[in-house]
Length: 239
Image (tube, rainbow, N blue to C red; front, top):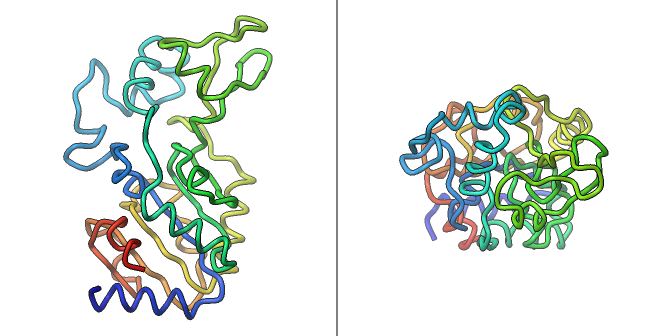
């Protein structure tokens, strides 16, 4: 265990209330690609750029193309929670962690046992018909292979994922701000802190210890009390 990981472990033990804010890097060790690394979605070639495909306009105009990409890259059929997901669930069960705030849409925090998960960008696990608002689970979308249609009214089923051009849920954001303000320790993990407004949540933290665990440097490294440029799974395995 490195000295910095030991410092992080001691800080967590000392803290009364920890909040965790995470991004794509939390799930890469579960086999889900991130968006900006060398092997990430933004560096792969498609007929359209991923940013375009994952926009509201593109979804409405080209649902077939959207769902080809969505099935191929965003529906992870066999991904399992890793050490980071499991440790966070353990802390919550111990009463140490007050919330997981995530930019991920894969549902792996819940699969690991976390109950208070604030999904800033929605979830692939929830889907609704755009006409009658009928709920569908992820298995229905997977089974469709291409565009899923409502069995009730025939409308297109849309995943409850926040696409480009769509707004974040205000209630989720408000609760995230509340949890951050109430925590005396905030751990940021697996995120470049480059996507706003989600990345701006860090500015609401007023607690004692800000820890940042990310493979690469971020714009907020200088502000953090502890910085670990390591894989988050390896760090959390040692805590």
